[in-house]
Image (cartoon, rainbow over all chains, first blue to last red; front, side):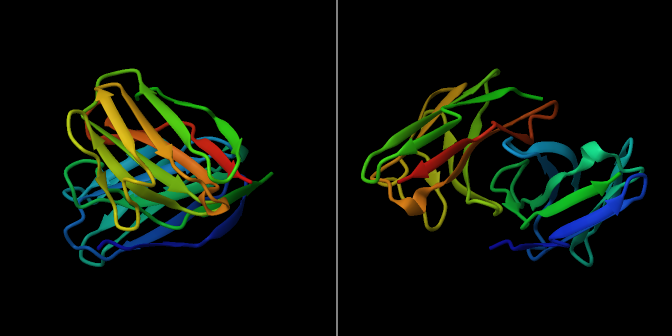
Length: 113
Length: 115
């Protein structure tokens, strides 16, 4: 089955700097890769996703890149703000849409003012 | 994005008892999912619930322990049966919806503590 590895487990950056979180996946049939942000006491919030027919996607300060050959994808957050502090999860699915998501272990991102 | 509401938001239960968690979506959805998130850990899929059919369970999860109902296109329940302290976790409901109909949104979770 699919296995998703996420690094780093914790990340601390200065406000205004960029943050990068990386994930690798094992199943070459995986075709959908969402990223979630989870704040304390809340459910995961979908922040961006990418499908296997696209190499990069950007939404304001957030971007995701996908390298299908190497089977890895990354989340990039630019101009970080204190409210970006949270736990971020990557996920992968080899089904149509968001079924059977397999999640990475999570990255605790802290933005230092 | 869809609004997904879970009840209760948290509970403390005695071992050996059962708890039923409710999940309500603000729009009709074909597929709903139940995940478990142990403290400080990642999310693990328990089962997929389609309206009108039996839920499909992932390896390591069985219907007798986690019975699921899906009576209509906006509602589902997960029961955690015969609870033990190892069942203490956050249980999350998710639905495949969104503008493309293929994005998964989550409820706020139910924090369960078994004593």
